[in-house]
Image 1 (tube, rainbow, N blue to C red):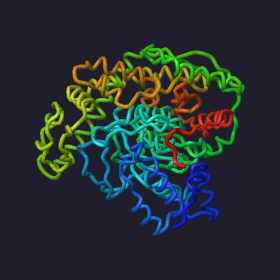
Image 2: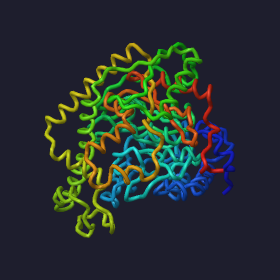
Image 3: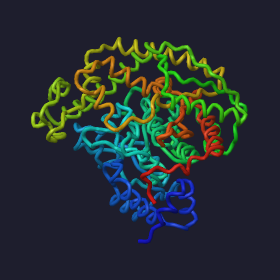
Image 4: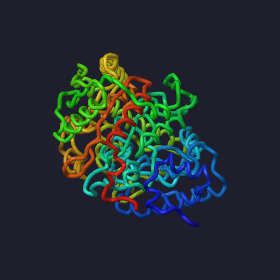
Length: 507
C-alpha cells in the first residue's frame, strides 16, 4: 500500500489530514501506514507507545471507518481508557493481564469522530506522578532531550505528538497530567471544565480527572473537544453546553482581556528563573496584543489546600486498590490488602490471577505510600479535605470574577532529568514531608484547576538556553474554554511554535 511521505505528514495537523481524507486525496489506510512508519521511527528512542495497535487498526480500516470530522486521522490512547477486549494496565504491574469488558463512552465518541487508534501510550503508575517512569513499563523520554522526562502522567502522549509521529493523542488530567507533559514537550494541552467530557456510570467518583487531548495546533484541540462534548451519559457534574462550537472560538480574536499573572506556588515557593522568565515573556506578549496584564494572585491558604489535595491523592490510590480487590473477589479469594501495601515482596508470593512478574513489587513506593496513608484515613478526613479545597476554590472563583484569566507557570522547574525523582525523594528514608514539598515545588501550579473544576491550558511559548520547553498556564472561569482557545490561537499566530522541532522527530 502506498503512503504519504512522512515529512509531508508531519507538517499537517489533524484538521488538515481529515480534510485530505474528506476530499479523497488520501485514504485512511494510507494515513495509517504513514503514521505506523513514523511511530516505528521514533518510538525505539522515546519508549512512548507501549502497545502498538497497528494490526487492529488495519482490520478496522478494512471494515470501514465512521464518517466523522476526523475520519482516518491517526490517534493514540493513554493506557487508562477501556476498549472492549483490549488490555489496559494504568501503568501498574498489578493489572498486567486485565482486559476491558466494555468500551468506555469517551472512546466510543472518538470512534464516531472517525479517529483510528494505533497504540497505547505510557503513563506513570496509576497516573499519580508528574513524570512518566513506571517501574513496570520503563521510562518515556523527552524528544527535546532523551536525558529528560516528558512530564506526566500523560508523558507518552505528549512525547509522540511533540515528535510529530501523531497530530493528537488522548490524555487525562487529574492534577496536571495533560498540562505538565504538554509543557515539558513543547506542545499544546488543555484540561476542560469539570463535566465537559463524557462520563460513564462506573467512572471514578472524585470528579477531578478530566479527559481531553494533547495536540500541536490549537484548532485541533478545539475541534476534538467539539467532537466529544455532546450531551453525556450518567453525568455527575452538570455543565451548560457551549453556546457555539469551540472551533469558532479559535477563529475569533480576543481583545482587552484582563490577565493576572503570578510566579509563586500557592505556598509561596518561587519558580525557577526559567519558569519565571517564561511567564514574564508571555505577560509582555499578551500586553503587546492589547490585553491588560498585571501581577496579582488570589490569597489562598496554600498549606491547607495541599494537605487536602494529599488526602485526595491518597484516595485515588486507595480507590484503585479497593476496586481491584473487589473485582478479584468475584473470581476467588482476594489477598489481604495489607500484603500489597508492605515493602516490596517477590511476586511469586501472589497467585491471584493478575501480574506475576519477577523482580517487580506489587506497587511502587509512592503508590504504596499514598495507599497506606489513605488506609489510615476516615470519611471525616475526606470531608475536611473537600472543605479546605472548597475554600481555596471560592477564593479563586472570586478572583476570576475580577480577571478574565490567570497566568502562571505550568511547572516550577524545567523538565526533570529522567530518574530525578526516583533517585532523590523516592529513595527509602526520605520523609513524606520532604517528598511532598519537592512535588509541590515542581507541580504545585496545576492541581487547583482540577479540584475547582476550572478549565486550564498549557501554551508552548518559551524554551530555555538548554533547549527545553517551558510552558505557561492560563486558568479561566468554569465553562470558558472558548476564552482559552481564543487567546491560545492568538498567541499561536503571534509566536508560532510549530517549527520548534525536537531532536527526536519523525521525518
